[in-house]
Length: 601
Image 1 (cartoon, rainbow, N blue to C red):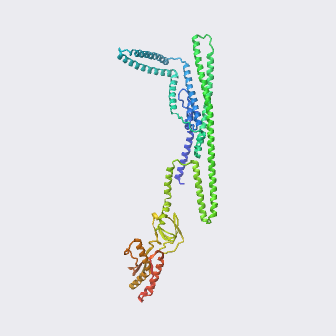
Image 2 (image 1 turned 90 degrees about the vertical axis):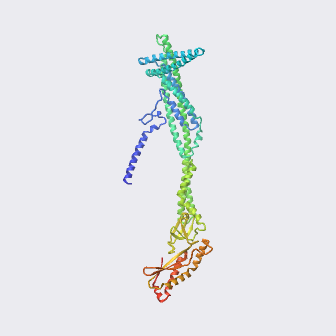
Image 3 (image 1 turned 90 degrees about the horizontal axis):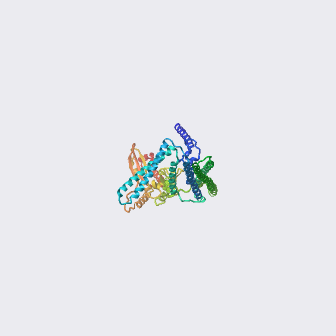
């Protein structure tokens, strides 16, 4: 590893460490119920209140209901939503009554705003009375037009006065600390939100726990479901703890309200009738608030019990999924055992029927690889299942395999070409990609040759066995010298020194060459005639030729003749012997040619 790669690896390790640490520190933002956790830093969950009234019971129930899966869970979730909704409604009712009981001493700006509110309330009443009077007078025929105009003006004035009254009431509530206006606004917003929630709520109960668990057929789905159930069980336990804390808080409020009510029941000495009436009214309101508090405590206690039953249901579903996970693990173990046993059994059978050590080793490798691939495929199917987009995946796999195995596909198709009338057979003499030899085996995908080197020049086997994919029959070229077109022109060159009588020698060589190659020439002409479908004279001649060519120290005699590829060497040797005999058996002048050596290519 060079220096630059070391630096890159070091930088990436630093980035990895920093990002992992930051991810751990900011994990709180991913909490489903952040208000159930203690705040620890700026990146951890914290409860953001919606307003004056604590609506966490409803937030918790709605969040958990969205995570419910089975029919049993959804039934418990709807019950939790009902109880939480009732508890929050009662909280609004309690807070409104408590706000009505609270009395504050107004002074300064708040007192002026109270007087302004009183004046505007009286003005609104006067506007409503005027509208009623004008509406009653609009029924007479006289002054219909003027009454109608006055009525519209009165209505517009009423709208302006009511808007000013609403603004003054809000200013008074803000200045005096009265929460009733804000509570009414929060209650209206909640009622609107609840209406939308009920309209969009799903009516589908889903399947039962066992039926829904059966759809998790793969090991990966089962593990994911188990983690989801574990997380949901933790959330439900946290919600139950929150409900218990609310029960304790509400119980404390109830005890405090009971003490205040007991204090109000005691009659103060020297109490006037008006003071007694006010005390009894406050006592009645306190009793109503106590009743509401008692109802809230009961609803919250029911939520505690319901979250307990919900947690038990999730735990049961978790056990069902664990059962399925154990089954999947058993299947994976069984597949591994079967793969090992199948590989061992096939190897034992192979050793009994195959005696060749090399073939046995090859088959052993193939069997091991095949059984392992089958086992791996089955394991992947159990873990991930059958892909959903099977046609698309099959198309992509087929295209990929076609690209990867295109040579073997061409080789298989080339085998049919080689089996044709102009193909190749065992024991044929062929040349493929510049390699010549005799065909010893012809398979579906490969052709094996016993190489003879440049056999047209030597014709001696090299002892090597050469293999070619049969694709050469389609996209390459090959020469078969054992079928049609097995004839070839060969050439011999003899150097004659200056001063030698070449014409008698030239005539003798030509006559001897014609005599030696006469049979091959006739056969070649007949075959060429059959191939070219010519019935008349041949377009080509197979007669030999003997020519003279100037050379540096004399002349060269070039002999060209037709011969079969398989007997080329024998024909050349025969012609060499004939030339030597001609040189030795000629005239005295020609005997000088005895020292000449015939030369080939």
